[in-house]
Amino acid sequence: MNESLSFIFRDKKGRDIHSQSSKLPMIPASNMKIVTGLISSFLLGENFEILTEFRISGDKLIVSGGPSPLLRTPEVETIREQLGKYNVTRVMFNGSFDWNEYAPKWAPEDQNECYQSRISSFSLNENCIPRTKKIRVTKTYDPHSERGVSDIRPYDTLSKKLLRDSADNIFPSFEFTTFSKGKLVYVHKEKIGDILEHLEPISCNFSADSLYKFIHHFRTGLPGSWKGGSETIMEEIGKLGLSEPDLFVVDGSGLSSLNKLTPSFLSRLMRFAVEHNGGKFLEYLPSPGTGTLEKRLEEFRDYGIKAKTGSLTGVATLSGYIKKLDITFSIMLNNTGKKGKAASDVVDETLGEGIDRIEKLRK
Image (tube, rainbow, N blue to C red; front, side, top):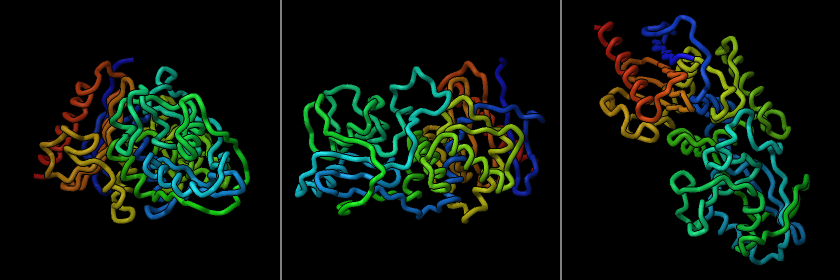
């Protein structure tokens, strides 16, 4: 297929100011994190807290409740100190997700990479572990900056860290349960706003997919699933009057090539972001020179741009809002042989051309 570039710049009345392609093609949705984040924020609110509870029942530690995408090593060490006075020998998990840790059409060749780690009910360091045993997971360990691999035994690893640091080949006993009673000894809390503050600026796949499954669990009480997340998001898109023919989502991060969105839909979604809750969601998105826009669009720092990047093999996207012009936009480069900066340069040049055209029209 030939390379295609599609884009839309729209004003607050929904009028196309600058666009290319009257029938916009469906494109793999590497901007899915905007959709997941905004729908989660709309459904739950930024102050909603996801709780993970740690309870003692006899010699068992029972971990139950919602997911823990932001749980890191220092807090687990604190939890372990709280457990020191109990004779705990086993860990039991009562989670909110199903057992399917990979979404449809995730690239099998990337299954060992941290950016495509397993999505489990409970997690530590985004289910990412050091690539080599020479790297110790310390208080400063960052799964986004350290070289790591996807943990193939996330429940084993979390159990081990909660109870003791044993030899690499020895793990505490753990099992899954529907039991969640006992003496409450610790509660791990994650606000939706805190998750979004982490997710959107650096484009965290793990947090996005955790939210995607959780909103299904929250709505139905059923184990959060990929199919359920899709149904939840598509239903909410419909309620907001944003549906378009053939829109389709299968994960929260956009890693799957089965996701299909359009620039038209994304520009309308961004307008909803501007108008909903005083535009609070926009605060989570990168601005020029920050987050995933580091070293990008710096010539437009004074335009009040808030935007989300997206990339897959052969795809580069950018969707956002330009405060100075009160314009929403979405740009998608598809089926390109360009990679990295070469692809993002095309997108950034398109944004610059759009801004220039709009400013000339308004003179």
